[in-house]
Image 1 (cartoon, rainbow, N blue to C red):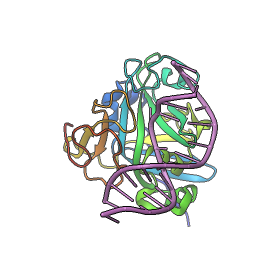
Image 2 (tube, chains in turn cyan, blue, brown):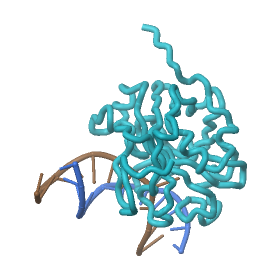
Image 3 (tube, rainbow, N blue to C red):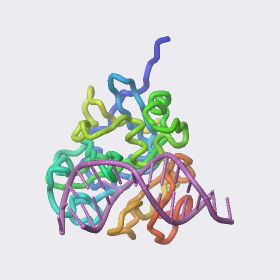
Length: 219
DNA sequence: TGCATGATGTTCT
DNA sequence: GAACATCATGCAC
């Protein structure tokens, strides 16, 4: 059987990312992020993201200036910043703003809408469906993202990673925000954005700040 | 359904 | 040597 993929298709333009990460982050909800390679294609509809601002953000990897690890954050917008954490997981960000301004958006969770078989095969323990890409480490596993993809351009045709506009864009009323997950500094700033009521949003962990999960608005 | 804990290694103090 | 943008498991309820 011949399979025609909707993705890779239209890509978000680089100008989309040439803005502060706090503006880009909510606009990424509902967009389709995909990886394509020899193993096949996996596409995820983004349901949860977090904005990290530049060197002024105490929770950002750029807070202490440029290093070898975070170099991609200082480059042009529309590229993937991939890092390794906790000794076993990768996380992927999309870089925002012009070179020299190190802001980015962490892709935290989404629904696998294509390539579920491949995504399941990549995930240990045979997790399926809801848990395929629910959390930043899981999302990278499902898409087969590791540090070899650090710096990949998501705005260029032919890249191993890409991102496309929403099939149906969520409205402002569908978006919630709250504190970021798993950080100790600047834990009170509501820079985590998610789709209200979406079951593919990751479970909220630490940071007992006010208002959590399908509750607090402020979109 | 929820909390506590161990795995594991890179980066920076 | 400590901290870390995490996850899966195990056991309590």
